Image (cartoon, rainbow, N blue to C red; front, side):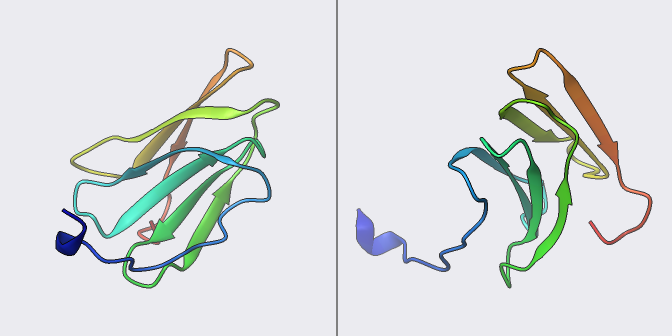
Amino acid sequence: DNSDYYLFKILRAHILPLTNCAFNKQGDKFITGSYDRTCKIWRTDSGEELMTLEGHRNVVYAIAFNNPWGNKIITGSFGALSHVFIALSPRW
């Protein structure tokens, strides 16, 4: 039933289409993957982009936080590579 939900924000996330999205366990941040070969980290409450993670040469088609801690993000691409990003600060 649509009356249980409302549109909170529309984000112009990437320059090319998204492939996926994932929330961290707390729900205060989420990540998006895209055909533009990047993964972005966002604040859920404000929609602020916190960081862009780069390094893939092909489409980022898989993303995940290491819940419940949320200090690592893993990405996978069509280039048969996986990248693990580790937070060096509490920014994300």
